[in-house]
Length: 361
Image 1 (tube, rainbow, N blue to C red):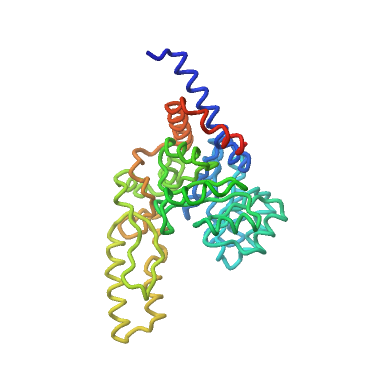
Image 2: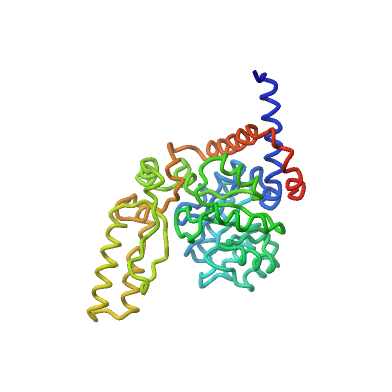
């Protein structure tokens, strides 16, 4: 029978191993834990971001469509709530991208996360020349290598299990495709992660940390409407589905969210719009616009107004693991405890990855 001292020793060894596994991620972020909060529009604002950073993780403001003035105020409000590092997520297609970068630099934000496409070279140079670390999303190995060559300081690989706007490939596949071949910079994994055991497994594969969104969206510090959080508590993994495209001539950007009256009506809306196009009532461009505008303001309706039947309830497949509305600190500590417990259970094989751990240090 295992003695208490053996169990305690295994826990200590596993905790030390966890520190080694995500050392590069922690060093880049400047945090106690290499856990990033996913940037979620309307949700990842001052309260949630500061709570994640104060809990030892790395909060990230979702700039989204904010103007430079709005972003400046949000950064200042976040800095009033935490002295810990946090980042700002900027959408590369934003028409005022350079101005937003300048706002981040002027406010002393140490990390800028570019999302929504490859960051323009000028914006990335602007950020790095201003002293910020740059993190970008890599949806494929070829793009990961390209981003490394252009000077990013870290990468996020996000699988299709994630909530919101998604790519076509699961994290399981992306991790196998990218992690063995990118050693120049820390790589953070994202998409469908809801337990520390899974995070530990990804770290053992070569990741330097993890990004989570869905768990944090339902945290007590999240400003999301109570209806929004209750929808998460009721949902299972199979309820979080990507939006459906009816006709390839009218592309729909895939977004994963909970199925509701709005998603069902979107299918009918596409069918009606397609019929109007085929009858000559609408031009192709007008029909595409009709489809794209269906969800205008839908995320805000769900998150802020609480209309979870007609709004867009973006959620990852890990939503099935959201069983309670908990403080961020509890979520983070539970993830860490689960990761340590998983590594302790596998403790006998700890010596097999010494080479990779030393190379990551």
